[in-house]
Image (cartoon, rainbow, N blue to C red):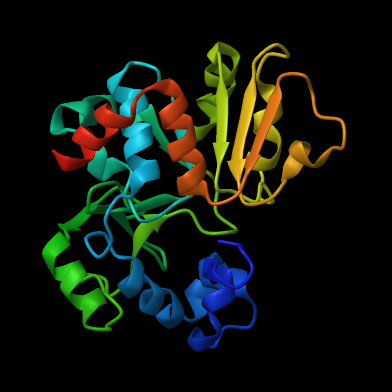
Length: 255
């Protein structure tokens, strides 16, 4: 999001918004949803493919080493690497901003998951067609509920909205972790900025990132902290090579 020159926020001028974060601000969205849906057209699932880093996370899962993955990404690429049988245990993946994998109606209408829509009085309005929503977004339209005409938005947690309840189970996760890997993040947004400090004192923390961030900015790192700066994909490839997983990961990506 925040990488200078290449991050999402550095490339939002064309959307004519007052400040970069406004595109994910619920108050701004309520007033003018058009910029968000222009961006949604570019980010909608299916337009992009999982990369090497996504497959590395999948490899951790395959080997039974992944306790949990926390992500702020909204492109759903991580979930594309889960086999259908894994969706019963989708808690393996925790989104703080959720993703385009579900949708919500606003302006007085609150929604459930998987494109099932419910209003605040719990009366079910209708099941919105995922195909219709995608078609409208990709054609540049603002999707509307056919019943109440409220704006439909992907189930993304905007600034100004509460985090999903399942996120707050993190305290149990971090107490169980034997290793914490932090990748591709600025750690500027809470609760990410602080939750990485909740692992046990003896647990190693590995930062694979373009820059020093958060507690890794300290001149004197903890003995259990390791930092590898540079291109994220290249850093992960280096780690995979050290683990002796190169051929396995290559096969996973090909299959």
